[in-house]
Length: 131
Image (cartoon, rainbow, N blue to C red; front, top):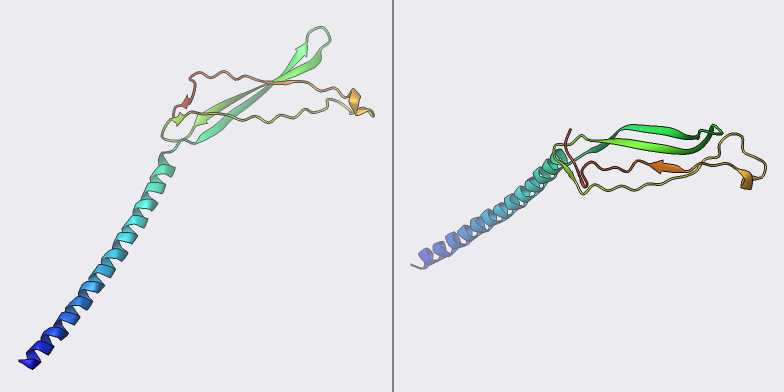
C-alpha cells in the first residue's frame, strides 16, 4: 500500500508537469497568434489605405499687359489617389519662398520678386476618391 501511494504521488507530479508544459505551449501559441494578427492588420491597412500622389504641377506666370512684366505666378496641383480607399479629411500645408527675377542687383533691397498664388479649389471638400 505504501508503494502504491508513492506511485500515485509520482504520477501526479508527472501529470502536473505535463499540464504545466501544455499551458506554457498554449500561452506561446496565443502570443504568436496575436503577433500574426497584428502583422495581418498592418498589411491590410497598408494595402487598403489611400495613397495621394501629385499627378501634375502647372505653373503659369501672370503678366502685366501694359508692361509685359511678370507680376505673379499661379500654381495648380492635380492630386490623384492611387490607393484602394477614399482619402478622407484631406488637408494641405504650403511652404513658399520668393526668388529674385533676373540678375540680382547690388542692393538687395531693390530686388524684384513676384507673389505666388495657388488655385485652392476643392471639387469635393475632404474626400479624394480612388483612381
